[in-house]
Length: 481
Image (cartoon, rainbow, N blue to C red; front, side):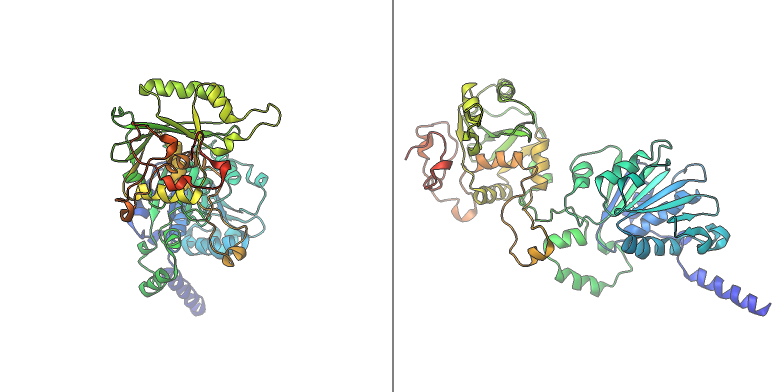
């Protein structure tokens, strides 16, 4: 009897030291708001070691036991699912230890982990009959189909096909899903679907690594010195940064996105830029330029699988709404390429339908520099009437190498990633005409390009040196030396 009592006392002492859901305290007010949210979907994104996974497992235990402090949960028993990265690092090293740590023994079958967890089925069963199924990104999408679920927790960002399949499992019970993640994959489908596009059914929460009071301050300071700025944004604050790095680092939506539907002053000049596509979207943008050289991109047409005749009708309708024609249309120089069947080029079709399109210059590095400078010095604004332009500006990124090993042996790539860049290309053809405005050259006198000789309504000077290129293929339409 004495030995039994000693073992019991030792077990109680060990259980008392082990943190569990009954003694859970959030690391920050952000974690608390995450638990209180009434949205169908929630995303808690943050730096590594910011307490995201603990918040996820506690939320899951509350829903499985019916002991949620902030919400009425589904009738017990419930079926839940946890989706993690892989078996070894995800299930074995993260999820199972978290469940062992945070599920009270009083909620386990016979008070025992061994009686509650089936390694063969990768399923945890509570004393009340609720179950949690553990799945990984490595499994086939078909394996995520099957029985209806009451909730799903995604621990880290997952493939879109797996998310969509799990989301369908929640329909029967009007279930909820939540994701805890550090966006190490860059601006993936999650960024496009939930960050860059508003969703009334999904709430976003952002936590910083410093929100975890249990981390060593000296270790955090050392980490801060080891990471570059992009890595800090991802690893410490959970910010979505493209893997190749953002191109328009000076773009600040809170500063540069403004209200639309305002009349353009008569003394502001108007210009239209076109990046043409068919399968990919055609991006047609209207830019207003003030007498002092400030740019407002205020209107967009962004459509794919639309022929030029139909696009021209849309262009003329926008011009009618504005009340005047643009002073100049500038477009992608590749629009001069002729179709092998019809023998016509896109630029010819635009001109045939009444759009006097001039060919711009590619000069990718030059336009990137100018676009960043115009943002930096608050000389470029985009209205809310241009959602696709804003979306692309937020995600405009450099290309990356095919593998980390190759990246380590080379300098970062300088060319933009050719995906979701149609509005940015359109802006680029326009900004290639604009002068630099960096402080050291603001006072430098620019001469008017001969392309625009005698254009009294042109509101700013064009860099004449830019047009002294020997590459005749990319000359602006109608340019004269």
